[in-house]
Length: 297
Image 1 (cartoon, helix red, strand yellow):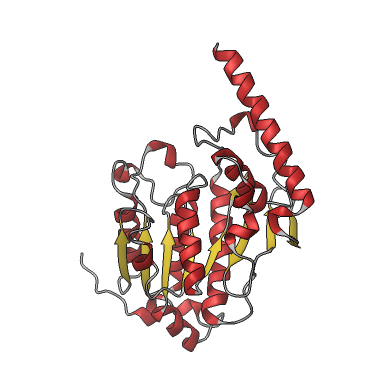
Image 2: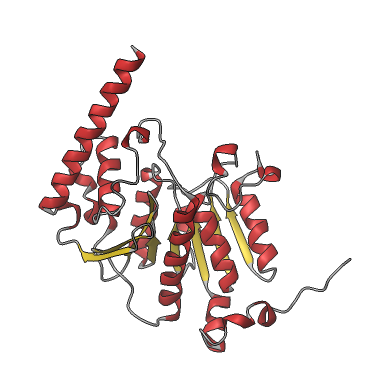
């Protein structure tokens, strides 16, 4: 049985009362870029589509596989082997058929990042934890263009929030990648900078962390928390309801023990306490690596 497509105003009528009709129109005309469409990125897309965002730039080069099923919005049996960008585009249009969705199937790269960010009002960072080269390109170009980037990390069962943009500390300065000697040091700095409050300690089995194999535990509830938190922040930016939550401010919420930490990280990752955390995590990873090597030798 065929159905006529509801008008935009009907699809998002239940938003009104929390936002005004004029604000809903602002969301309809907004253009949001989502870099990465796996765990948080796919959930960002679904949440933003239900908010009524009218224009999307989405990027991902990967395809869905079985290991994605515990957390990724587009991961279903019919999606196995299909490109994530194509599946998420269909998902967005199945929620908001009036939306315009532009797909960047090669991911974020130096050759396409300018076009990916062209005309964009806000950027959502849904890149894989280990995709630091792409993340550096994305944040640097967004900074040059004065575009806010919202990033939220599912660390253990917790969720985090950072916003980088005009008036705040830059992405590179906050994470202090210049002070890293190798890629593993960069990944350590990124993890420690994302979650300075360490509310996830005791949740993550460190034996399951393997930066070299690009593997880490993840849980679907943390992904959903990220989407709610980050997309709410994106709405505040788009609607100009308040000032953005700019770095070096950070937040981390732990739903297990119902704890919230908000702070201002003076000097970013160059803060002496952060430097110690980075050193301690690197030593722990080296011990785990040695144990793995001993077990396989």
